[in-house]
Image 1 (tube, helix red, strand yellow):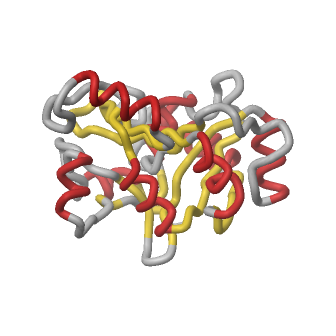
Image 2: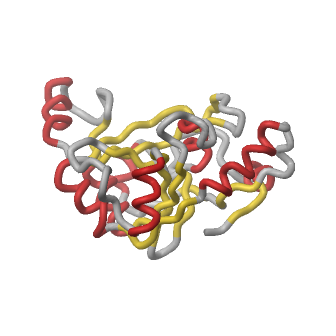
Image 3: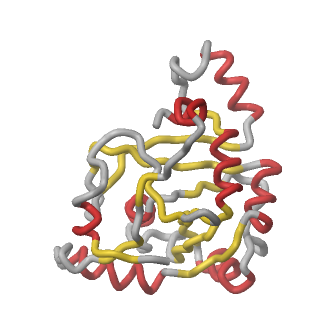
Length: 208
């Protein structure tokens, strides 16, 4: 993983709009999840999701580090103590994006509410856009993406689609001290850029 000062990145990040902020290259996209100890430690040790991890429930991945920190309270919320950085195959990430069905009805994406509801029922991948957040948890104008995975795709995600799983909980705890002490000039986070997509139809579907 690559890391950089938060304030340095803030200067070049888009301030608003829909963007998939992520660390990625030609091979992988890094996404984040936070789990209770048993699930997180099993995944980091075995390099796949198994043991107490449920293949029957939807799991949500977040390519945006600060959104994950908002969701998990920097790893302090119960059941979200272990922060995992999952090196996901880029081809798998793109496969997910191409299957996404919006979590809420969007008249620009679906011809009717009924058509959207049918798409939701049969979907393997869910798309949700939320307000992004700063290190303190305050909402900002830019939107952040979450991707929900279930059914046969969760089985692919749990093992076949993963290149590497890192437990970055200690890093998260260290950086959270700077946040608590209001020392954002010292805060270091994973380096992220807008995820670029060439497919015009996919960009339109995602509202990028």
